[in-house]
Image 1 (cartoon, rainbow, N blue to C red):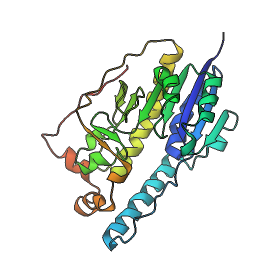
Image 2: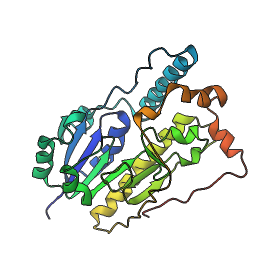
Image 3: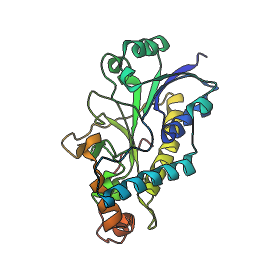
Length: 272
């Protein structure tokens, strides 16, 4: 039997490699190609001329994120994890280039998994959109775009810190939804603990989705309410937003939420 061709578009941060590596579990049954988009440094530099409090929070927040991710995922390098796999590494400005398009067209995948890269545009999106699933670290349609595991905490809604598997479109995280999940919250969870749990759960979910794909099961997708929620951009986040997380709540927003007897529950879409 001819092996199915699986294309992975992945970022290069540990969380991206950790999740994408789930597909390697099936490498004997499939043909895999990976296109890694080189991401920025995992720890961004603080804005210039910050006051003492905001600079302290900024450095603490991103150092803690890096520490937690390395502890839970490892300092993963694609060169080692995917060393025996056919892969290419591109810069972000080459994602939608003719060269990338030709690489994908030549491989002609049966299934495309996307995680941790920039928006895919025409003509590439037209070639792969009907056989692609994107993993968004955020719950669409409520939280679309950038830093969408952060914003639920800022809005005092940690129950919305989850993930969405969806079709890709020309828009931002607004494609038809296959599956969503959120981690179980514990009172001692900080903002990064919940993010780690969400990523770990998404890897398990991806394995289940992939098993279903290999069994030729049909997926059911659900349209998003595009009038609901909000899209956050990279420049939406500012250092002063961290004051609420650390100075006001001392990173105990989950505890605050769980102590609220009138807390709002959300209904998620599950492919199971």
